[in-house]
Image (cartoon, rainbow, N blue to C red; front, side, top):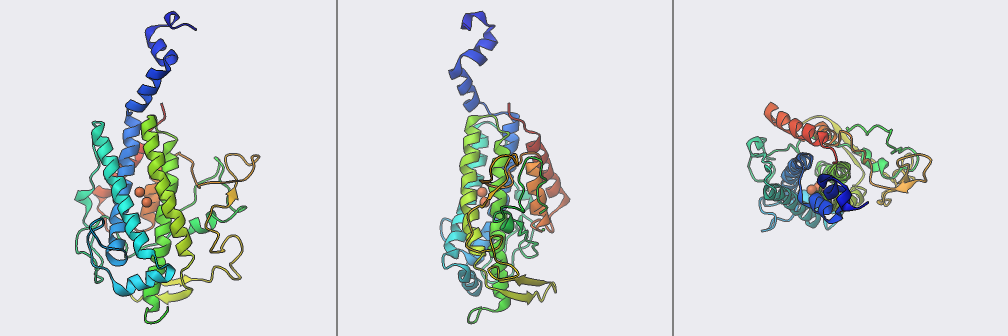
Length: 336
Ligand SMILES: [Fe+2]
Ligand SMILES: [Fe+2]
């Protein structure tokens, strides 16, 4: 079909591939802005929680300033892996760069960046080493959803087709059992948070329009996967123990994951790569994938998971209203 046979508008959109490509990489749609603004907010939240972990158990330096470390807590984390302080530091810095990059990109496109500064109202940990500043997130009363552990290991009990519903979110030497339990909990929480990011990025990527925004989402999302797999490996090293929290009275138990009644492919701690599972259609062969990746309601799902884990205990109604609005707008975005 010759260009001159078409109306001008159709000619530019159908025939001239260079114009089309330019349009797709240069234009940022309302939906793209909404998705990026929700991602910016989640990165601000991640940065806030990771900074708190870094102040106590990471490496405090010019790249990730703040805090002065807790010696025994850091030793307990090192029981999971001697590199834990470095990994916590690097994960924290990654989240800071994600948040700064997405907001700067929004500004470069004339869109409004996201600030959660008015909501930095929650108290800091009183443990030695923590800064005493207002926080966005609570890390002192968590319900850590550990369903990712078997979700990524199971080949059979793990349907991930488009029809499936998304899962509900739910001592050596002188380190005391309580300190080790706090470190173990952090070890699992790290993986819980990062598997959330691992799913969120591919979930929203399916609804972005601009190729450049797609590149951003794929590129940042990939580092969330790096984080998740690292933490998935370290969580499995948590020493077996059971302890009662003297403040809340609740019991936390870390079982031997490699022996009966556990053990096997669903629990074996060195199975840190995704096992193949059903994907898209059960008639297709099983495939090793990130899971879940269904796009419908992705932003609200992420917000609900954060909330169910207790991260926002103590936050104001204004905070929840602000975050819900961002999530609704991101979930309304459609690929054009
Ligand atoms: Fe991130
Ligand atoms: Fe992350």
